Length: 122
Image (cartoon, rainbow, N blue to C red):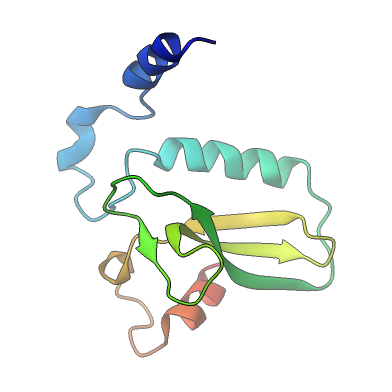
């Protein structure tokens, strides 16, 4: 695929309607939320749940400009999108959630740390 063709496809791809931005003011990741939900459904469709699971953070490398990009000092991948993932012993990811910042959390369990909130949510 040529560079110009790729840039054309990249310019027209959208996962949600921009007019819905006013209704989704609390969710900073609303533009890619439909894509994330579709990927989560396919992960759950082909999974065989295991007895032992773990919740951990996953950083997807990204060096571009975006407000959701995180910087984590001391990690091998320092810049990128942060996801919370529920994975089994085999390494299969059952569920994941995009981290949109501290303010994006719901008002439930305000006294807990962010990691504890994610475990209860998943």
